[in-house]
Each structure stands twice: as structure tokens, then as C-alpha cells.
Image 1 (tube, each protein chain N blue to C red):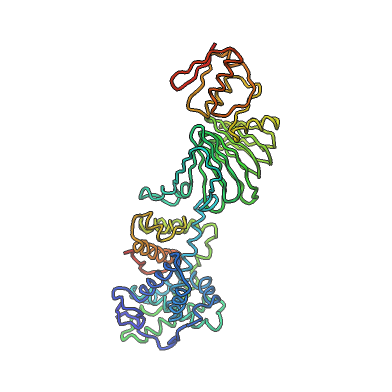
Image 2 (image 1 turned 90 degrees about the vertical axis):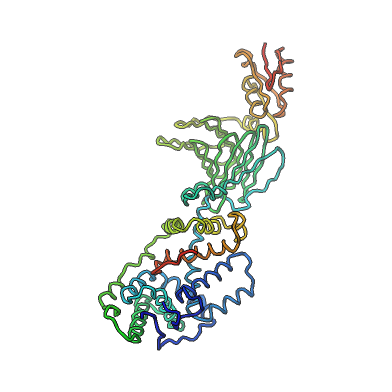
Amino acid sequence: MGEISGNNRNQAEPPGAAATAPELRAWFVREVLPLEAALMQFLRRSWRNPADLDDLCQEVYARACEAAREKLPNPTKPFLFAIARNLIIDHVRHENVVSIEAVADPDMLSTSMEAPNQERSVMAREELHVLQSVIDRLPERCRQAVVMQKVEGLTRREIASRMGISEKTVKRHLEDGMCALADALYGASGHPRQPK
Amino acid sequence: MNTDSTFHDEGEAPMTAAAATRTQAAEWLERKGSGEWTVSDQAALDAWLGQSWKNATAFWRLESAWTRADRLSALRKPGFGRKAFARSRSAAPFFKIAVSVALLAGASFGLYEMQSFSHIKTYATPVGGRELLTLADGSQIELNTDTVLRVATGTSNREVWLDKGEAFFEIRHDAAHPFVVNAGAQRIVDLGTKFTARRNGGQTEVSLLEGRAKIETVGNNARSAILSPGDVAVATADKVSVSGKSTQDLADQLGWQRGMLVFRHTPLAEAAAAFNRYNDRKIVVAGADIGRLTINGTFPTNATDLFSRAAKDAFGLHVEKQQGRTVISR
């Protein structure tokens, strides 16, 4: 129960070179990522197994890029939520048992779509403050590694020698930091990745 | 979620497919920033991105967040970049203490503290020492004897703290980034100048040779004064007084840059105090009356013996070397 089965549309071809197209990437970062918090909220209401949310979100992104590769949609928000809604419906249809709460009701959908876009309202000058509070919440060693790279501009090797730990461990701290930062900034994850 | 999902890219059982993709994306991104990134690495990354939209979007998402975090470098406060200083002279012994390690101390060290302490370098000269610092922006700071100066290094602001002693500043003008010297309760905001700043307890004396600068007190009762060439400002916590000096006087005052003390009708007590800044062996002028005798002359800053002999010869004074000090008396 609850797993997402394959979808019958958008059996997407690999993006190939489109994945390195700057316009598509720029659109995704500028238009789609700021909607992540609202999208997750919508998915959370529409799908009953929280463990699937990250996968659903990623699938929405994949479908959105596939659909946008020919022509970038404008505006992005209704486009993205239509994809999310179709995705949920596809999956609900493939479920043997359709539970009532699995279908997003239109009111909730519109509520989600009207959800204020917090990220966009973040003023540039507040960005630093937001980043600081995100960084402050990282586990200590992870935070130190991120700070040394981002604030002090040290390389992995320099960080390793400064912290007296292996490069491999630094690498892991940095990777954890990246994931935590993205989750915090885009407000995504149903269950943020726990640093190992 | 079950591992038989069609979303499943790689076989890491306990993770969701999305988490597995994210982990891979993070590994790529970390490698890309590790400083050892080659053309073939980039080609391999492009191929991985091209495999699926999930790879591409997971990578874009992390990369975009990680790039936003570059803004954090603004916390690297003021300054002049990593390799800020080139020592153009290696005269007196000179101590450099990198304080940025303070970052690592203390588990509760938040970014706010870092904002004030990270990337501040401390430069200090011993008694009799002198050192010239050249900043990345081309500005120069020369530290006089027994001086402690902290310099914030980083990207945007230019700021230093004169904790003790005296320094000569020759600052490259940059309207967008004024150069700020903090000296205790005073701040000197440079508007593109040459000036000296000297701390003496709670008092700061600023002499302006060229350009324009503003000195202000930092406090509830803030006072400020704009200085023009020849102005000498003496600021205490709540007061700034400005007087004029001749070019000659200012040049004399900067004799230390040549390792010289220049005296013109200088009271003996004042001259002794000047020597004492540069030497561990202190000169004591015993008696207010002889302290008022005035002298002329140019002396190397370390020439206490020459100075006391001159006092002896010129005024017939008695010079006695005691342990660690030279006493001049009748």
C-alpha cells in the first residue's frame, strides 16, 4: 500500500542535453523551486503516506521539466499544480483501494495554490538572515564544515586538516549540509534527511 | 516506501528513491566544489544529469541552495581577501596571530559571533618594532612601536581596530567602501587619505596629512569632526578637539617611519616619553624643572644613550644607569 506505481504518461525520455540547457535550469530555479513548500503542502494533503512525499515531489519536477522542455510555461504555478494533481490522480487510479482522503478536494487544491509564496517575499537583505538561521540549526560538525567552506572559502582538504578529520568525513558533512540547506530554503521535505 | 517502486533508480534499500537521487546529486556537487574538478568530471556529470529529469532537478535544486549559501561569505566581514597582506619590509620582529581559528572554539559558537570574529587577523609590533602592511586594495598601514592592530579580511567592508599604539594609514579611496579605523571609543572614517592614529589610553589622536577623514566618538553622546590636512584631532570618549599643525610639525611627527624621533623645542620630559615608547630601557627625568628644559635634534628611536649623553652635555645633568632604566637628574 501506498507505494507509487509507475505512471502511464510521460514515460519520459532521458533529457539528454536538455538537462544542461541553461534556460530550463534557470526557469526551474527561478519559478519552480520557490513553489516547493506550497507543492509539498498540497501533496501532503492529497496523499496519505508521508513516506512517499519526496518521491512525488521529485516526480512532479521531472514531469514539469519534461513538459517545459519545448516551451517554458507562463505562468508556472497553475502549470505545476496541474501536473501535481494529475500525478495524484494517476496514482490513485492505479491503487487497488482508493481511499477517500487520497483525492485532493478542489478547495484544498485552491487553498494550496493560493498559498503565499514565502520564498519570493524574502527580501534580498533578509536572505543572509535566513541562511544564518538555517546554518545555525545544522549539527555542529556539519555546520563547522559548511561554514569553513562557505564563509572562509576553504577547500575540502583544508577543512579536513583544520577539523582534524578525514576528507571523507568532511565530504559527508558537506553533502549533509547541502541537503539540509536545500530542504530549509525550499521548505520541501516531508522528512528531512538525517545526517549520518 | 517499498523498494520495488518504478521510481527506484539505485539500489540503496532503506532510502526512498528521491533520497537516493539526492544523495548522488550531493556527491556530485561536493566533488564539483572540492577544487579538483576536471573537464572529464564535468562530462561525467553532464551525462548523469542527462540520464533522467530526476537527476537533473535534484542536482539543480541542491546547486541552487548551495550557491545561495555563497552569500554567507558576506559574514567574512570586511576586508581585503585571503592573501591580504604582503610584507614589504622585514625589519623588526613581528608577530602575526590568526584569530580565525576562534571559529572552532566552543560548541555554541553561532554565526553572529563569527560575524564579529571570523577572519580578523591581529598584527602586533613589540616595543621598538615597526611593520608595514600592504593591503590587497593597495592601501598601506605602517605600525609603529608597541602596537596592536586587528584587520578584518573578507570581501566588502574595510575595517581595522587599533587596539594599542600608533599607525600610519595611506588609504586608497573607494567611495563605496569607506575605510574605518576603530580606536576604542572612536572611529575614524577615511575619505581617501593619509593620516596617523595613535591611541593613548582612552584618548585617540589623529593627524591628517592628506585628503579628508572624519573622526567620531561612538556612544550616546556622539561627536564628530571632519578633518582637513594639517588637522590634529584629539578625541576622548565624549569630546573631539581639533587643532592645526604645520606641515613641518606633521613631518616631524612621522619621523618614526624613518626610525627617527625629531625634537624641536621639545620639553625634556616629553622627549623622554617619546623614547620610552620605543625602548624597554626607560628614561626617567627626575624633577619637574629639568623636565621643562627643551631640546632640538633628530635621534634614532633606539638611541637612549645618545639622548641621555646629549642631555648631560648640553645641560650638565647627571645621568645614572640603573637596572632597566636611565635616570636623568640634576
